[in-house]
Length: 99
Image (cartoon, rainbow, N blue to C red; front, side, top):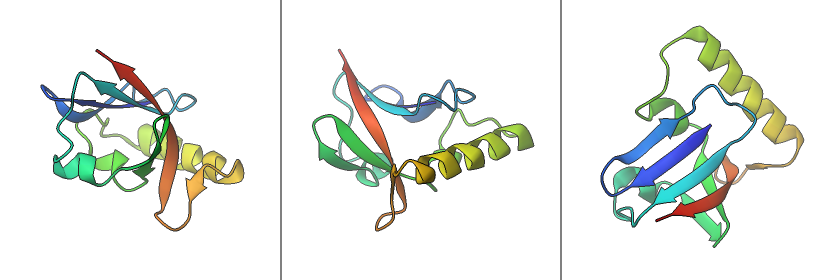
């Protein structure tokens, strides 16, 4: 699952059924002042915290129970591995940059 951020498309969900590869992809120079971008916290140049409740409201999210179950299972696994920041209730995501 990829959270994509771009100046053209804003913030959206790509590859929503890939629950094994959660990451944040920055395409070009996304608008940092976007309300959705403002909800993310950059830990460093390579990692960000994406709020757990943000992902289900992003454009590109499938509207079915299979996705909801898969997302809940992904969050539970991330919690087991220590990838959830309990203070912000967010998932740690590696950051990739595309030009």
